[in-house]
Length: 347
Ligand code: NAD
Ligand code: UDP
Image (cartoon, rainbow, N blue to C red):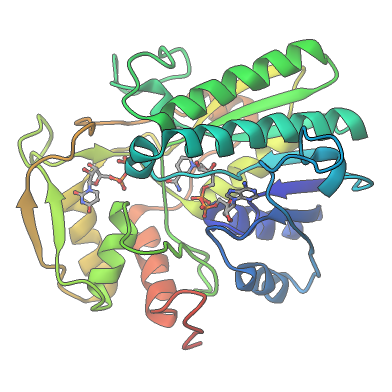
């Protein structure tokens, strides 16, 4: 299949590109490189031995010809059968401070992509949604029947819930379109080669890249956001999923699309606390991770754990990698590339 990856140079997109190519698919990357480097694409080419077509474009920009959508302009004449839509802004705190920017980028990108797909006859879309659409958990583990879009606390989360609805409506209006909404839990880890991985700009918001930067000496200590939750050790519990398992989930979803719109959780079904992640990383890296307990982060919930049974059954997919492997692979990436893609590599 020829697959367009919007945001394909990013963390999850680059790993998915690699797995797709290894499975014999052809990949086209569309990215504006606002949060990624072309070096990631170059390394996927190096790992797979396959050249990748790159379209450098802002998917949320208006088409200069019509004033409405990038589709006809940047994607004119680009033939693809399916799209995996990763492109978007993803920092929760930033979305609270810059709501209009987040809504514009995340919603207009999706509208433009759907228009472009209709124009050139592409019939499959896989969307990067998030467990954040479930908001405060009403039951655990969370299955796909859990309410969506109730009491969400930030524009990023709302943009994911709204995009799910936009895709459902676009699919209903165009029955030949097969749509999949993938609700990721907490992606972590890197390709085991250490050549591609997560390369956050500035101070990482997420736990695993922060710990990795502490381990490599870039940051002094981890702030653990609260130890008063009703969890195993008082710290927040999340379902961490290895990015290679996540990438394989996209391939499974793409190869098994069905009529209509279908949502799947992509998670392991197992929760780990912040302190469990710290200990797993210390073991994997052989480095001590100094930390201090600080007040809980506003908007954080105690526990989020996926029920992945639907994806297991319908996609024939399940996670196979452990948290220990995710830590080892993150460490291989971080220690070989302490400055990320821009800093070159020690490999
Ligand atoms: P990322 O920032 O590494 O990747 C997103 C890519 O989209 C980047 O390469 C960026 O340059 C590109 N991009 C952003 N705006 C664009 C635009 N207007 N036009 C073209 N390209 C644009 O993030 P990621 O972690 O790989 O996440 C991929 C997707 O998965 C995002 O939609 C994110 O919201 C979603 N998601 C991520 C997580 C996570 O924890 N990483 C969890 C749940 C959902
Ligand atoms: N966390 C933390 N310190 C950090 C970053 C995160 O203690 O510097 C905690 C956070 O409170 C949550 C877990 O680690 O319990 C995962 O947070 P992350 O931001 O990675 O993902 P989230 O589940 O919030 O999307």
